[in-house]
Figure 1 (cartoon, rainbow, N blue to C red):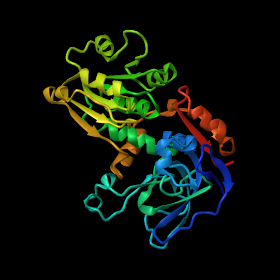
Figure 2: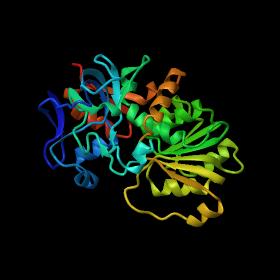
Figure 3: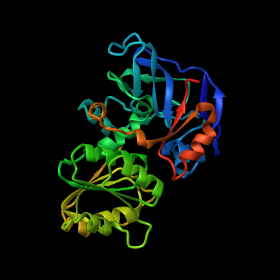
Length: 344
């Protein structure tokens, strides 16, 4: 089969012929239809410091996908050949305290699809049946291909009650944009989102952000967002999606007392914040990694069935042979989610 492989420990990706994945009694074999390019894949392609520590070459990349089940193991009961499925890209141990308690997203031994084991940038991918989500209702294939990052957005946005709240999102990458759509759909009063990319801020407006603010412009910090929205006490909910020190600091400065922050953005290095403000303003900060398995996936499906429209987030589609152009576009600030089509 064809697959996109990090063949060597150096920058670049290779489109190669590799053997189809082997499956066991509890596994599902999936013929991949479409995949989404993630920031993680960009890191691995460029072979930066994080990738060099996290990935061992050779490795098939990719963890965002949708496809059709073509074979199931002897022990698989609830998934059938022909089912349209996506996959949870965090594979957990199943035996630690959190896994046994049903809190699989908190497993200490998580292995990432396309990072710690071969992934979905291929014509076929194998997964344990326990990591497979069957789409039981009609779904746009491009959207089904990005259920993984959509799940990050939903998990982050729904960490705290949103009805009637004023929400601040720092970072208008694809996940931040999807979080803005979720927050509005879930009943937030105002949703402000900040970034330095006019293109991505415009995408955020298309999905329903109340205010999309370019914080690189003079006088356009988060305090200006407060002023424009007429907020007297600050934002109730913060969703930090950028991993930028200045974004989190500015967010903390503009939260109401008792405000709550869900932090998904992954900083590149340690940085200082004024913890006295966290204490005296009684702010809650919650770290988010991945999705709740599978409560978040259920919520995603229900949100789409209820009319949530994420199609503006999809800004490009390429055949898998055009992966170089697809990755180049995904690496710019003038793109949303980029899709690779494996059906050609």
